[in-house]
Amino acid sequence: MKMKEVNNMVSGKYTGGVLTVSVTGKIDSANADAVENEINELRKNEHVALVIDFENLEYISSAGLRVILRLKRSEKDMKVANVSNDVYDIFEMTGFTEMMPVEKAYRRISLDGSERVAEGAKGIVYRINADTMVKVFKDDNCLPLILQERNLARRAFVLGIPTAISYDVVKFGDKFGSVFEMLNAEPLSKFIREDPEHLDKYAELFADLLKKIHSTVVETSDIPSAKPWLDNMVKTAKTYLPSDISAKIEHLVSELPEPHTMLHCDYHTNNIMLQNGEALLIDMDKVSYGHPVIEFACMALGFVIFGELDHSVTEKFLTYSYETGLEFWHKAVKRYLGTDDDSLARSVEDKAYAVGYIRYLSHVLKRHSHDSKEGKDAIEFCSKRLKDVLSRVETLDF
Image (cartoon, rainbow, N blue to C red; front, side):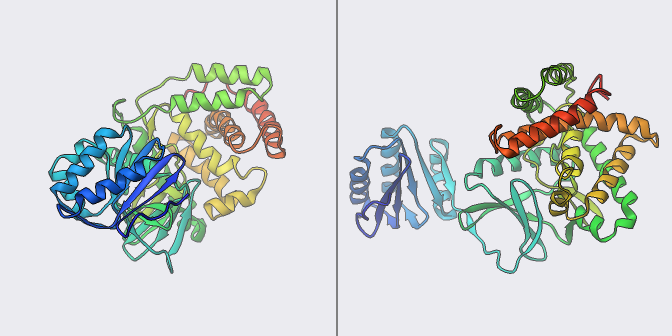
């Protein structure tokens, strides 16, 4: 609910118990007292948090900083947002950034005429010019996810993983985006779609990069474990599965080793960009450590499981046919394992499916009720597939 504007300089609005006060122009010794009085009038209304929005503030003096300091002392939950670079420098130089959250304003961009390069569950990647791409997140409240992804990408890069590093955060309407410098880069999916006769070459590149990721040992203080994520998926799914299936999958997961192996956990051909022959990883928000079967389950989900009942799902997601994705998956598994033995490759694929169907069921049940058509179909589908797969799986380790 927008409040009546107090004057041309200070206005406020309440949203979900949060009072947002916007200040325009300058705060200096000539008007600091008046600005503070107007803010305090707005604060008389009940609220649980205060946001001072400085998107349209050009300058703040020491008198204005003292206003902010007094507000901070009287508010349990307060932050300053949308601060310009010049104003942010003042907050940082005076130590205010160490006393309270101070957030910079984000550059706004237009996507008019931009090429849509790829789409994932959480965002869409656009090329905004010859050198630059931006991943626009679908969730309006995704800023913590963006910052997490940047931190994980930076850590992976330091450990030697060829990762596209985001160097800026921007806004498109109400959406946030991460900007990457990606000169001449295209997703691996595009190469597969346009050049399917060289599938072996692309599967080799795909598998070799994955082996590089999995050969990287990480410190647990730097990167989170994937095991709690897996445990939560099992917890979500097991309630709706036959008791013998849920008991076996619980046992298999409980026995799974937890090495300090780096995992990407969203590894598919949309998330590998080829730049002048070099492969670069994007979408690093799920980077974690754990057993490679978790990674393989995520891969099986994208290449096989999501499109198993409706092949058009794969074609929309990966931009090539389900049959091509299935063939690519088999080739990549063999290359990763360094074998031409079909039975060995299929045994690892079965382990991936055992976890993959659990993840698929958890995915559906987080979006649909278990007694909806979508929920019932997913439970029936996964129960049948898991019964078959688990008859051949005695351990998830490989």
